[in-house]
Image (cartoon, rainbow, N blue to C red):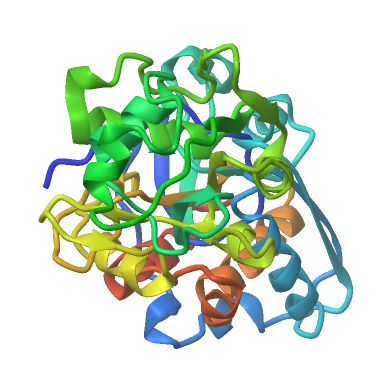
Length: 367
């Protein structure tokens, strides 16, 4: 399947797999250590070789935040003299920080959009995909535990056309379910967000012209929507607001104890979000040569249709040999043993073939 660049992403951060986007010139990867990720093997030559000392800073994607926190803590036992810091702030912030040179890596859920490319002039940016995961339709509706939603109904809700929970469109998706007349409150992102970019790309792909708000890191939502920063902020709005629905990454929704809807996929099946259904979606993607791809709206009977991905972006040319070595060690860990941490926090490891390509790309980081 032909994959497209997403329009926007929230800022960058430390993450996983390797993907090379060259704003000037980009080429394919060189050979490296064996695959990790979903295959379960570790790229130990990258993460567990010579002992290193220094600090890496990253920022960006809040989708990656829990994974980064878990990975940083575990990585300390491998490289005790290295310090890795990761702040969220959204994919847009991460990319801005990387362009300004204030971080070593950026976490982003989308490739660099065209309007930001000038900030990276003269630099080759490598994309390392690190995680796959579902964007849930998290909701707060007393007495309704198994909500089902079609893409067309989701588009109607988030465009503000469907205003109450007993709307005929929602009732048609949930035959036999007693739905209240409660008003719908939209919970959306206030920051520049890769979650927003991927969620709206799903709507563009799934319903076409029936979705009129476009796809971007920021969207002009209906004026009644309640906006919050980061996935945790949106989850809190949903949790505290009866009748609310929001788009929240699965690990955050799960940690917040939110109810999530099953969504009708491309093959016509209603599928619940989970690491397994996200992996089923990712198995269908064909990445570009720079390892960019879109996991939303992929085929497959068990594929969750609002699955997205996140990369760690780095400059191929590092200022010192030590910086290059530290990035290779940390990214190698994310693509190796770090992949084993994902399922326990509600995220999905990379497909083996994609992980292999990312690991091979580590050798492109030089000084």
